[in-house]
Image 1: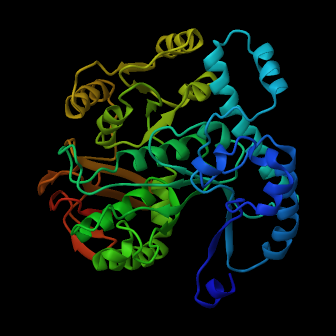
Image 2: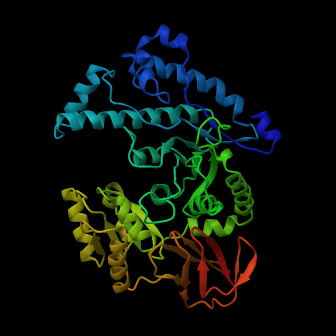
Image 3: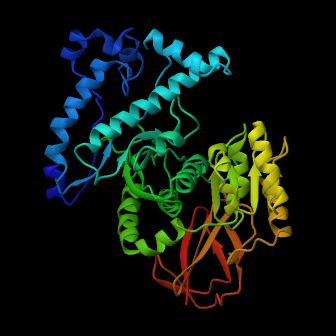
Length: 451
């Protein structure tokens, strides 16, 4: 941390018991009762329900946090690196018996799985409380991979406990489906998920795998991968470098390192404008569920409006009052309580679009577009084109919008707006432009202010 301070850097400090001491394992074998934790998971190699394990962690925090909490290089704490936790029978037998008694409506195997997830949530609640005995000022997060669900990690419940949302995002170039130039779907979706569910929490990526391999990668991809995520809510990025030990180190790509440096300076310079997009709120919400949520998200991404992501818990809590259109992915199973809440939403003027089966993302995009148009949900700036991401916002007296070409080919776009787009400036480059019509190269992004 001293070295970081001397080189004008900050630290997201990993306080996870990543390397649990051997003396503690030998003294208390119950810290990994079956031995399988150590063998199968380097990131959580211990039994979280064991009291001896928790006593070691409590002691560790009581010594470490008072030593570092006032260090000028400290920016946040990371409790677990790449959190996931297998369901192994090393929990107390009475815990399982009690859980079954408290949840008699759950089928046995479902109850067992839910108990494992609830155990991780409870452990992190305890972990945060222990750390907060010594420091409540710095954000506290865990790294949860930005892709689909991971074993026994309830991101929503844990996000309500933590004071920051962390991740380990992995975009890729090219998009191996062939639909778009790069695959940003899950990283973008996860940022919109956190930005909606916990809008007061910073989003921190302590291990951004922006590089997908050794093959030549265009600089435009690195720039879009950095800009796209800050505009979707990211507040801190630490790119994976690890010297050149593995194939996905950013250090293999000189153009990626240059893009990181340039973007970092631009983010500092344009912070207020970026935050305006992070805080915007649109009329469309995507339900987090179903078997094809990626396709539904792509259908929403190019609607020229901000997309919120809502869950059953949030909907049952009344979140739909903030939206006019709800998009439900194909294959979603709804509880009776959800059915009642959705019926009430429609009766009060809300619209629900259920994604039909066997449709491509582009076909779904057209269906959502037609629904949005019928509802007269109009953005400040619209392009109405598959593969082109547009967001627009008024920030005080400033009129801002950005365009990002996700398609594999150059795109000629026409922007429609009540604003006079003939006098504008690209804030990234500082160059003036007429923004009514533009030609964008694949993965080109422009952050535009209308003068």
